[in-house]
Length: 144
Ligand SMILES: [Zn+2]
Image 1 (tube, rainbow, N blue to C red):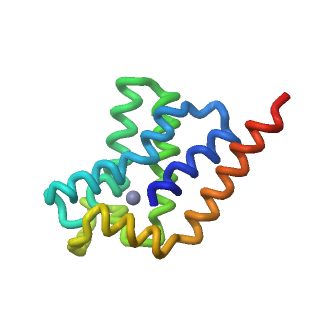
Image 2 (cartoon, rainbow, N blue to C red):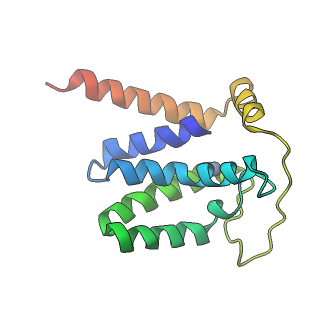
């Protein structure tokens, strides 16, 4: 759902221009980059593990706040929680490691996931993407 995870921060930046772009987009992509990267290296059993938890959300937001400040941390946290909400229809280990979670193994690689995404698109992701495209075109062609 990488396209949807890029569309959501674009929509948020339109309505909340005070959000900083880099930490907003980074926070929106971080859970998949981390977990799917670990999964591609076969270090975890599927692409939604530790970075898809409220624990990781809280820890990384605190790290950003300490090293970069409150404003980037706010943008990071909004992007990050937006990612987790967008993934909410699937198997997301929200409360891990504080609760037991049965991580289901996945053998699909990144190319199989892309093919599945292309052949079976998510209507929510399509809606987010169209919304972001409309906003971007309006910004581009309606500004004096
Ligand atoms: Zn995800």
